[in-house]
View 1 (cartoon, rainbow, N blue to C red):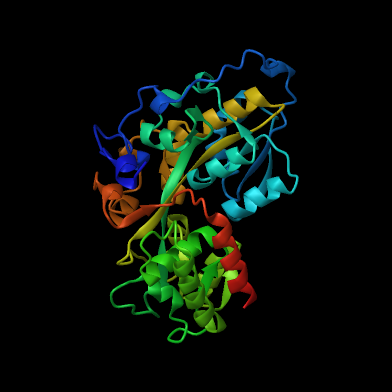
View 2 (cartoon, helix red, strand yellow):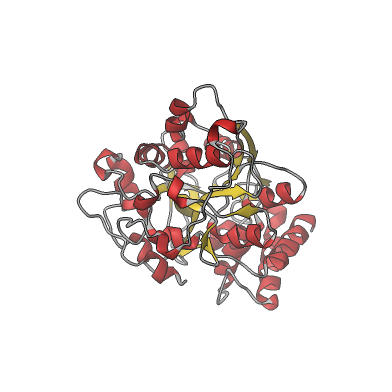
Length: 371
């Protein structure tokens, strides 16, 4: 599916959520997904109820799974955290066993190919009819719903406006370490950073670069690396570096801008090559012993109340089309141009895609770090 096809039809109608991203209100069709029956599973009362969840730090916030907590008091999940999709997949391939994971759509195919997850029974999700059909399609493999979409957002450059004057903003600012020595920090993520390098060197398809383009990106990183502050893995650590003045230029999500905007003068920009965007959701580990609890947890996470909290506290989009825009902070609406119904249809937004040549990106990134 093309980005335009995925995002076609984004609109704000009757005050419903702008950040449902695409496709309008849900109709329960699941975008053509084949339902997976769960009749052979033990009833929920026979399950351990001790959910093991692999996720980004911050997503354990109780407001996001309040419904599950109220229905199952005392059944607090156990989280294991990671800093990137690549790290999450590596953890599981290395032996981690859980019940629920939170991959972004560009990685779902990789999880399926590795036989790590199984389809959801969408009939067990009360919020499923209200989930955005366009996002649902991105979580399907071979007509089955392997991912329940939950959140999406932008990836862009954030810089200290009192320290940096980029002129026309470009992803090349991420490599201008001679002008800003020691003040640029790179996210330790091969998928995103190699694609960003692709935009900076003018690659035709930054998510699916040729060997020659990968070499050009690698050379650009290696040239800039000596004057770059560090590679960051901790989001909170990066935010602290930015707020303290240790770093002036960084890869950032909207939640990062929210965290620092009242501490320092900062801009969450739109590079001339365009912002990147992610869309993520929940996947069910194959053979989970908490099958029904997993469905209950995810159903709570994609509810309107959880979506509203996500919007106001992380500035991330929600997959639920029933969230009321009137309950969203007006400052966020202004900062991210959320009143624009065609926001994500614009040519300056690039949704992260599955990369069949991911191994080459990973190899190049290891070589960049080792150089």
